[in-house]
Length: 193
Image (cartoon, rainbow, N blue to C red; front, side, top):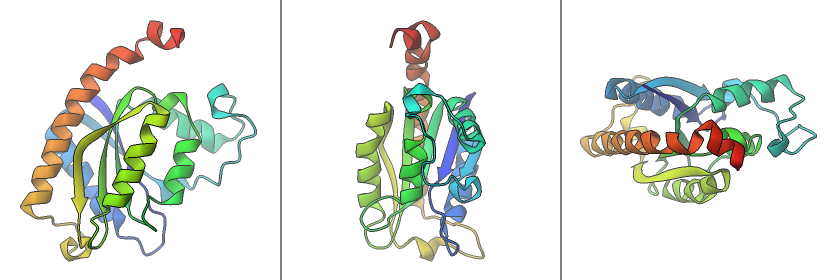
């Protein structure tokens, strides 16, 4: 089974994202191809970049960076669960991405976005555009949830059939990409890059 890290991108105290993140984790566990760990950026509480050295050097001085590095290095794949803030994804996620370089490389990522009428598609698009900078392969298969609050009932996310089908398609594709990208992470290839 592959190690999947599901990253919840919002940190606002009144956020609704954890309900969606938990549903994504449940779907991923039920899918059967992944060992799932949820990484909530609010709980990780990474400060604004505070490392003196460029992340490409891996000369981390802070324990929170070393911990973040271990989580991301252990992953075979990712799903980012993100709200849309100001036509993009939240700043804490950008900060978390920028902490590391090598740990992200040659892994596939699905994106689950949510918002009002936009369904988070502008956040999805911005994140999808940025991920290749880290050598992350963003999937085309999207899970975009419009007017997401209508699906939150008693502190639980209860999606419609369209969202469920999109999640299944994303997990199936994530499995395929994760399998083939393992080849690029072989020690002899990593050492040559």
